[in-house]
Amino acid sequence: MNHSELERIARGMVAPGKGILAADESTGTIKKRFDAIAFESTETNRQLYREMLLAAPGINEAISGVIMYDETLRQKTRAGVPFPQHLASLGIFPGIKVDQGAKPLANFPNETVTEGLDGLRERLKEYHGLGARFAKWRAVIDIGAGYPTRFCIEANAHALARYAALCQEQGIVPIVEPEVLMDGAHSLETCEAVTDEVLCETFRALAAHRVHLEGIVLKPNMVISGKKNAARATPEQVAEATVRCLRRWVSPAVPGIAFLSGGQSTTEATLHLSLMNRQPLPWALTFSYGRALQDSALKAWGGKPANFEAGQREFMRRARLNGLAAKGGYTADMESGAA
Ligand code: 13P
Image (tube, rainbow, N blue to C red; front, side):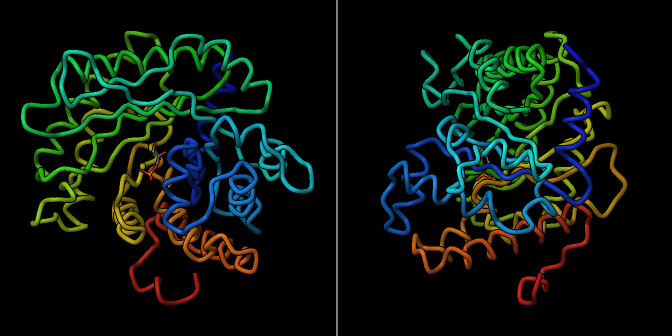
């Protein structure tokens, strides 16, 4: 394992003013996104949509890495260039989702554990050969009456750490993603307490598995009130609580933290990131958004060939605004003007 190469990639993934595009929706998830615009989810259509995003003019000005799904990693641009090579030629790191989804945790109602460790070493070898330089594994922690349990948090942290160690062994930077969901009716305080426990346990497991912290990127949730909570926390409260929580648990050895958007609106996700970046921080703080980068572009495109460029422009508008937010330079009034 070459630590300096892992460190170089990890630092590049969180380069100043840039962030990661999460475009690794599984075939089931992308179908849901296409259903919303009444667009059929065929392999050809999925290629077309991913090409709209990955070949958007100027993408490398705001995007440092793209997380792909197995199918996308093997697809090509219409000009015949494999997507990983297309991205690499623009100085963008190709990434791959390697987990196989959150599955019910036996004997623990309402809780899940992420699967995909069996055979992972061989899959990572193949993905590296196809051009992937980083990977993603998402653990899911839900909040409800009586959960999450300590056992669920430990089981997920253990799997994340085994995944991270295997990635580094194969020269691939692991994105370590322990996501505390914002779907419930819980308060910001509850989210903070659960996120505290999850990050503490995740970093304990990473240390136990001898993971090289300088060669990972952490992808956490923000500390935020649940979507069903009528008293939503303000953007300032979210920014303050998130940074406070991360400072407690994330060693400054970690080069960067790239947030998931988790169901926040596109503008909320950008504002929260910008507010957090208005102070000196021990790590780079940027985005690894899926929905918050894609939703408005998907709508602007609508699956219509005539709107292909309009979709690209909308994607780039959000990518650039989030790039500004990664430097603390975004304000809400930029939404109306040109980015
Ligand atoms: P969202 O930003 O839509 O939460 O997706 C990010 C991601 O990669 C989830 O695993």
